[in-house]
Structure formats: C-alpha cells, structure tokens
Length: 203
Image (tube, rainbow, N blue to C red; front, side, top):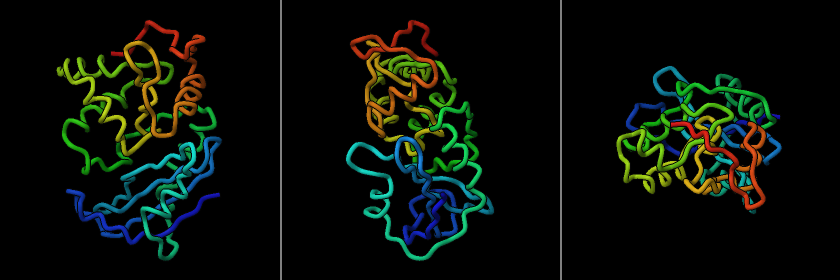
C-alpha cells in the first residue's frame, strides 16, 4: 500500500526553485517501511530524500519526528520510482535514473561521489579508497565514506555497494544486516568473518 502526505517542510534551502510544497510516500518492504520525500521543481517532481528504516527506528517514525504532517496529497508521478524501490528491495534487478532525484542540497564533492557510486553495477562492489582514486582524490577515502554515509538517496544511489578496503562492510543507513543482505541478493558472498569474498572491485 502507498501512503502519501503533504509536508509543511519547506524546500527553500534547495538551490533549485521548487514549489515550496513537499510530500512523502511510504512503501512497505522486506526491510521495513521506506519513505520517499519529494517536491516539484519547475514542472518536474523529484525526490530529495529517501529514508530507510534502521534497527530500532522505522522510516515512518523518522518522518513523524522530522517532518510535521498536514493533509494528504497525490504523488502519482513518483509512483513508478516507489514501485521500483519496492521491487528492488524484493530482489529484482532495477536500475534507477538520476533524473528522478534533486541533488541541489549536496556539495559538489558529494555529488561527484554519488555519481560514481551510481555507476557501480549490480553484482559489483568498490571501496571508499578506490572511489577516491577514481575521483582523482587518492587521500579522500574518509571524505568519500562520509559522503556516502550521508547519501540522501539510498537504493536509488546504491551506496551499499561501497565497502572498506579490508572487504568488511563499513557502515550503512539501514544497518549492516540490510547492507549484507542487499549484497548477497546481488551475488556477493561473505566469509565467516563477514568480509566480502571478492578481489574484483569496480573502479
């Protein structure tokens, strides 16, 4: 079931001109509810944040705390993305377009990191260090990790595909169990110590 609500949260902090009206959709998934926050920019609806449920805190609860709710609203233009996120989290092979998100609240460096992460295909992983080298910033592995830790668009930009150089998981907004499960669904195996069994890194 799809839930849509109008938010009183303003989008004035975004560089792009929006309508000032933002909404959210909630979808149930095997990992708990997922929330997509969106607004209309020009004449195009775009997602500006995706919230994952995490251990102890559901995405539904995060919305109730962070964003005051007023009246219900239609979000039919976002339904395709919501359907794809739900299908992805059920194990389907879905590729998302960056055209559906608004990255105006991200710094230039974070946008570079997110675009690089978006380029990692299903069934592959990279490391924070390798992504930093790919961006010609070989000493910025920690900054890459921070940029991905604050990824506004998990799933759409698959930050679960970035791991540490020692092949351990690193962090993830939805929790490490979710990150490992997503990677296993994509064919990545793990050894008894919880490290990815691969030497074939992307980038």
